[in-house]
Amino acid sequence: MKKVIAIFGAGSGLGASVAQRFGREGYAVALVARRRNNLESLADELQGRGITALPFTADLGQLNEVAPLIEAIRSTLGRIDAIYYAPASTEAFLPASQMTVEMMRTRTDYLFLGLVAVVNEVLADFRQHGEGAVLAGFGGSAAQGIAFMSGPAPAQAAARNYLMSLHGELAQENIHVAMVTISAVIEGSAYHLSVESSESDAPDDFEMPVVDPDVLAEQLWEAANGRGEVEFVVP
Image (cartoon, rainbow, N blue to C red; front, side, top):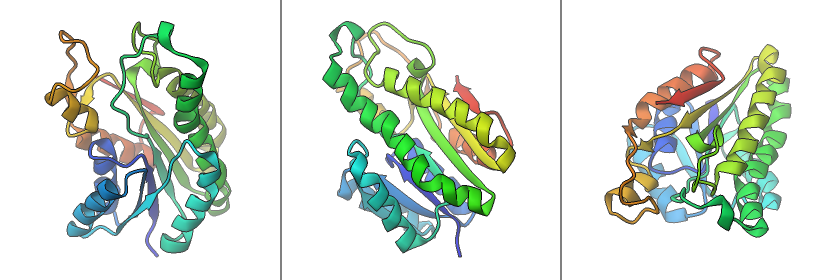
């Protein structure tokens, strides 16, 4: 039976590259996001490359959807062996002074609590089989607060802290936790497309480097197999 990676927040950027990298190693890929059409397009692209890939629609901010989602993946593809959690967003430039409790709560639900819910569902299987990988991707503001960039950052900072602790607890059980923290625009991502079309929320004079998602996916593959650091910082 093929190993399975579930990609939460599957999109056209790093998620697609992670799917391709693991798929080349024989993994089946569960693609999870809210928009069915985008998922089906990505699944078709991967299947055209000889990779088993199936779409699963879910709103990761609705925590009661997580357990049925994981069961649907298991019943269709088999036991999950690795997860990559990075719900996509095209927002970044929200001032902390304008954030409300409800805005924070919404982002915390899908960026942090959704991750915890997924880990809760897969960790017992990882431990029973003596292996597994928990991977994630964050923006650079998750590691250091930046003025006018307080949209997803606080929730991602909580997720980053949680994964650091999880790494310390699970490393000796052959369960690998790793994340990439990116202060750059991922080539081909939804945010990159919004920047290219001048539809992003970035200031007119804002510039960031553009990074190749295939390079980052290779680092995550190495980390999932116990080779590499718990966190890769880009650039």
